[in-house]
Image (cartoon, rainbow, N blue to C red; front, side, top):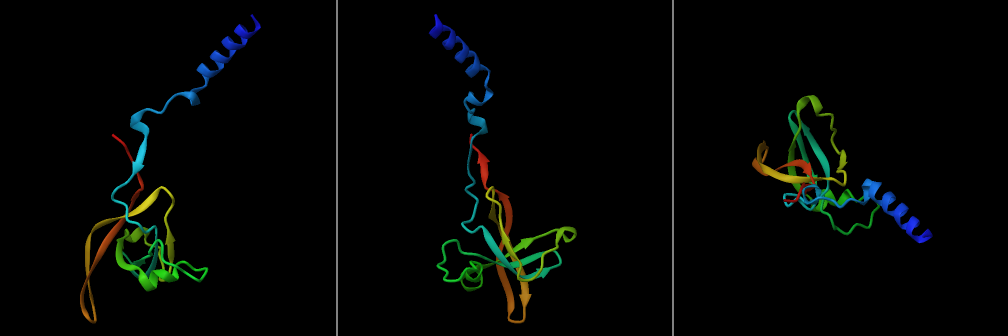
Length: 133
């Protein structure tokens, strides 16, 4: 009889605990396929409506404690648009995304230099997770 009472008590405790419910398929997330490998960038020029930056390679061997040095050496140049009212970035600023964020390609940006016209990848910050179907 004692074991039966413990069984009944355990059943009610488990049934009343919402954390034991299974996760429904519509709340599961998967990695966003749009995400680029890099999750850091180093700004080298602030513009009125965005920033030009080096997208930092993820697995570049660095003998220095400053992992951002690899950005200048091996990083691709990218443009990230920023609203003028939110653009408080500065030259040489280092940006690291949160774990749930990533950079995604968003077209091409064209600008003029002394050497002529340059075209670079335009990027945006997106959620690194998407809901699975």
